[in-house]
Length: 524
Image (cartoon, rainbow, N blue to C red; front, side, top):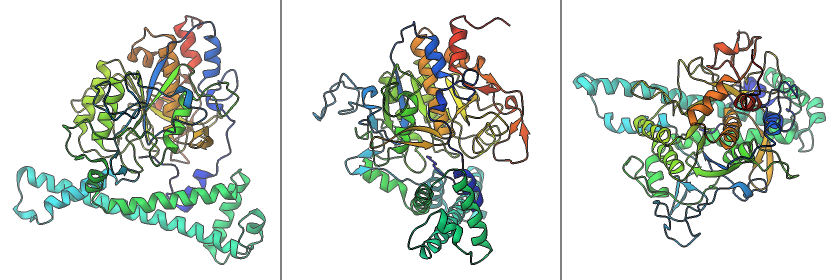
């Protein structure tokens, strides 16, 4: 699920959006050279200036990508075996006219934008089975499944209630802003807020909070846009979670979403109706460097392969697995996956795709998640931990960090885990491309994952003899450690050492890895 802004409560919402803006392109900077906790990419490319890189195809499995964006159009992958728009599968790969990638969530009747959560899909499918069941008459496996159904039902209802509450909280904030506008000639600005007299204690608290976020740099337009986005996201969560998502999917895409034997469905519309997230991710990885427009991506030796499989809502296991296989079969050596969920429908199908990628030496880079959870206790999906208990070695799980050292170096929203999250990478206020030749700051492990994927692409390009596992090992061994304690994500009081909440104990650094691979690091 793509999450831009999470309204857990009025005050947490303000805390989430009221952040000082980070320096532009900070994610490419170096902690030692620039005193900014970026990924050390600029330094790495300088170290590599006398070497030549091979081109690396990086697949972006996401919501869609604006392939005409001014800072991306020159680095979009092209399927040379396909003739554009002739309605034929020229290269016989099973996908018609897949010139620049593929969408597994579009078809003859349009494109999926909003989807139900996996929890909602499980609840509705199990409700159909057990709607007339009498608990006392069930036994064996059916009785066990009914117990799971009751648990799913309770969690679904609680989740819907939470969505309703978050929508109500947004309405309260928006209502307060409208009250200020009424007394300020229809305008909401700092001076109008200052002059406004609150009508009750709630409005008093809201006025204080709004004054704070304006002090920290957010303007009124940005705030109202965030609120509108939150209203849309949570409103659609409620709407689509109460629908028959399978029938909508079948009509739109044209496949049976529960038929895992069919891999060949979808369309070639890789942008889709909402390409903000995927375009932002692609820009972090490889927006054209030093072209005097936009931003600098991490890597300059990359072609981006857009693969659309992630709606606003929870992605389906079928689409995720087939997206991985599509990327692998069409030459991707790195796959970025900035999505995740806490329930699954067919984990084995995804596991098999992960193992298929491993067999083809493809590195999978995955966002750890934005819920400030310990993944050792509650993992998200997809995951490198396979059903048979083994672990996929071609997998990197990434948490998010900010640009400034100190106790708040880790993103407050980032998931973590001493056994499940490999390292931390830039993921707070990362400035990157969005549709229509625009650029925005976005925060999330969704940004930390492509920050890492870009570094991986540098290593795979300049050191092509390395396997996926060796690339990962090089990055893990050369992280920037942090000896002081940092604030535990989601907890304002608890402080921990970084090596207690991730496997490597540090922050990704491309220059450290490059120097190690070139034998330039000083022997300790």
